[in-house]
Image 1 (cartoon, rainbow, N blue to C red):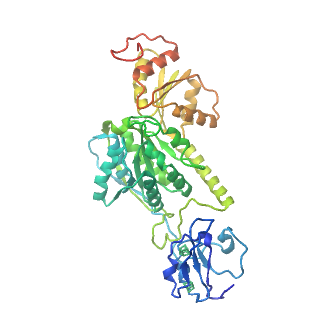
Image 2: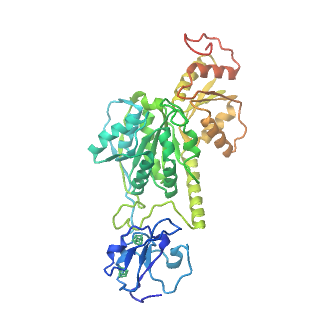
Image 3: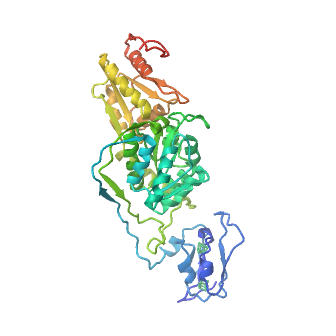
Length: 480
Ligand code: SF4
Ligand code: SF4
């Protein structure tokens, strides 16, 4: 072993070398070369260091961006393999200033007349007002109009719009952009969202922000381009492998397509975790009145960003933790974060639920039909109400708890085969609410939406009231 008291030579931890090669040109003695053997622990090829000619100048130590890739040679040969070098050497010495967070700021906007916007356009406007200047995606119907608008606007705002080669490429670009601490997003639809799941898992593991706007369409497979609530299960319980969760927001109006997009950017940085917006094809395409907010956001820069300046140079955002206790501790940290989201971020919209005996549970476009059905049913003297979860994960169990206690029956209205009901049952079970009233359901699939007539009929049946109003001409399935 070679060592020097005042000028320690470099010691390579091959398992922490990312093979970036920055140390190679930094060495004036040509001691460092690219290796030719894959390290089986990491799957990358570390450099090799020949310390015979080394003069201990330390330039390679300065050049290495990895916290523990190259370290000063220890005085004694450590007995280690995958041991954390911080336990051997303590934190890596650095003269760089400690990075400090630059907070985001709200900039007041003048009051303007409401706009009439298509849902997908409203989400794009919301992203720009939230400070997003980076978009990575792959066009897919029925989400494309939002991407199209951002492709026009972002270059004019010194932003970046990248149409990636695929959704897999796009999600990894979002990983990189989020890792740099910048607000970034994609707009996609169900098959594209499925392709992004692996990258989302990596982002959750690395604790990186990013907004995924999923305009859900009919499935499985390529399905069709009509609305279906096809991805609730994926968004709430299936974000890639491992211990993964993200806040899932479910808009029901063009206004919410804008408002919840802005909220998503706030939450994604608050928790250092991706946020999913689960919209549907009908909401993406429909137009409606949209009030612009009273502020826009000037993004800050988090202290953990890999920004490229001296202060942020020691930062590393990655999801790999090869040492088992480290990964276990990281999972405990993530679970604590999920608990905090569950406690603080539940959101729901309750319509006439105060005295409701027959509660309709719906989100996205089906909630719009359900809202109309509640009006009709109330006119008939049936005490109906609408419970609309705005966060699908965490499911708003605290708002639901008293509703469930008072209800005589629940009716789940879904454009899909019960994914919302499944999430409700699991969330209420975890919340300790096991005693549920009888549950009925109206489900349509493949892009067919539940109709007002079907919801009214099902509620009447649930309430034990006979149908009495003649169905409109052409309607399927009998009287209203
Ligand atoms: S300490 Fe100096 S001479 Fe030695 S390997 Fe590093 S850069 Fe080269
Ligand atoms: S600079 Fe560090 S991480 Fe990059 S190749 Fe050299 S030792 Fe490996």
